[in-house]
Image (cartoon, rainbow, N blue to C red; front, top):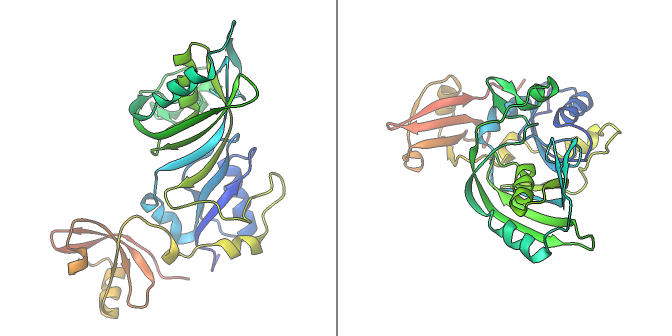
Length: 298
């Protein structure tokens, strides 16, 4: 639908899936081309970036990290999903570790490491997602991935088994798995109770755009917060073309000689003389090679 393109930084409530939110925005805007950048589990709330229209072609150039979260965890339990929604696999018998030991162990998880994703997650094994395999009764452990935990700050609460936390991690890191690994290291098990994503790089949910768990979003409110293509926080630096002729050549998929501002190799956002985003190019061998060319606005 004309006019509905760009980036929406949605504040997702706990309950709906990321796909549910996409579907609601499609219905509210009439724009069929809607996608999300960075899945949130149904339990989780917070930042869910949505891309609409031509912006769907720019997802891979959005910041992927660091991702910031806050939430709560409970010690003394292990579940099939590594959070409180799963089936209980084991309950700890006996006393729980004291808060000092918990905080020290949490601090030891900071740094680069190999992390095994949760058994119920969107990670693929043999071309099939783990959660689909789990539903079919097939339990498979995915290969570990290298992740980086930049910060994991844990605080005790009035309830001995419950802690609140703040985390800052690289893309691809599962907070559920961090909590699981913390509980395993403490010898008592641990599950995620609640989770809220507060930021991905420079992106954060704006005030006033928190969706109702059940009611459809208002189109006027979405329109008010829609960031146009030119305002999207894409990671590649910008290069501005000097003439309309160069803009037309780029739009036709023709490589252009690099300017001094694009001499280094790598991706570049390409801007026309009027400030409009034309797409993304790769600077290589003295040329700006078109990689994503955005079709003209309808």
